[in-house]
Length: 124
Length: 308
Image (tube, rainbow over all chains, first blue to last red; front, side, top):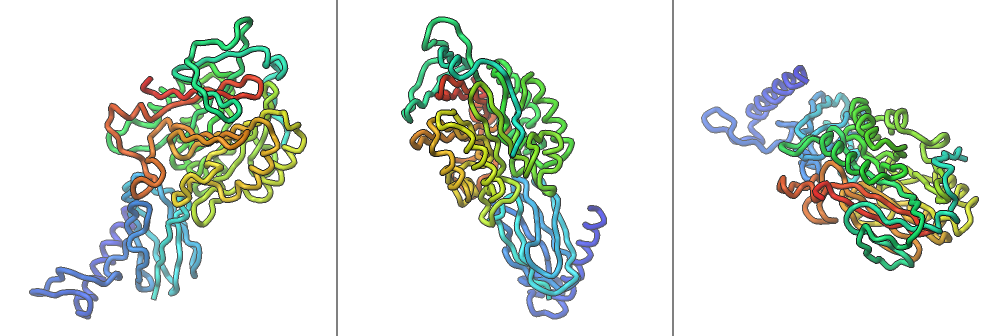
């Protein structure tokens, strides 16, 4: 987990830099990024009120997506469709899970404890 | 075909019919002929020799659940087990979600605490007991079924008990699911019984549609209920929703149960079925255990909360 968190910080920093340079999805004031709309900047999904938010995110190949469980209940992440299979252990309240996507494509996933919870990751 | 688990060679049903006993705490609800009727406990419906046949239900112990200042699920299970033991049931059923995260340590802790009821305990898993391994660890410790996917039946005092499993594979909408193999087994198991045999079915997720948007139902319950309908007395006991909701339909009665760990909201109230946050002094009024008394083909329920 520690290793993963370090990687995530690095990725986020890289994403911020690349968006700032491209200047397409971020407001740049005095050389600092103060707001950004590009979902690829923070490949994170919050689990709250029995739903994945955002429900669909787009990331670049090689990006690591983090899920953070902010519900009091336990959830899981399980890919149901896509180029790679991924599966989390049970995520207690307050815990997170990360997965790095190496292949482009559209990934659908659910929570196995509450299969009506659906999410999509689009990897380009 | 499942091997029968013989709980007791005690009195036969005819013998049991001679005796009536009401026990436990609070109020008993009887469901004779589909009409609920309250009896104050302590009253005896018939004088004479008293020989009761009763069993307990405990559910959703969620060992491992933690949430802020909420009491530990271990502590509340310990308390619930103490209350259930005091009700002196002949045996106990646990209707699932023994653990919170399907962890081996959580199953071990639950098993140790449940020994406090000093009675035989018959378990079925909840969806929290099958995370990641389809219930392998659960069945290793608590399994009773000898064939198929862990479902089983046994006879006690002339009543036929059936433990079904509807959590190993949930539907895409989150409903419980028995699957064709289990339904076929159930059909064959029931076919051997006469229609006058009282039936008690216990399974984790409700067998009627309480709130399907939250997965509070079982998608393929209909064929199971159809196979049960010819019997004169069918009692269906579930957990999963952490509150008591009951329904009567002809000779069939449906009852969900309290959790021993945390309450959940009323169906459809709020954004989701997550643990209901209540003031500390109210919590124990929403956790509890159940004693069921069987007399002839009537099953009487007595729910006790941890606050009583």
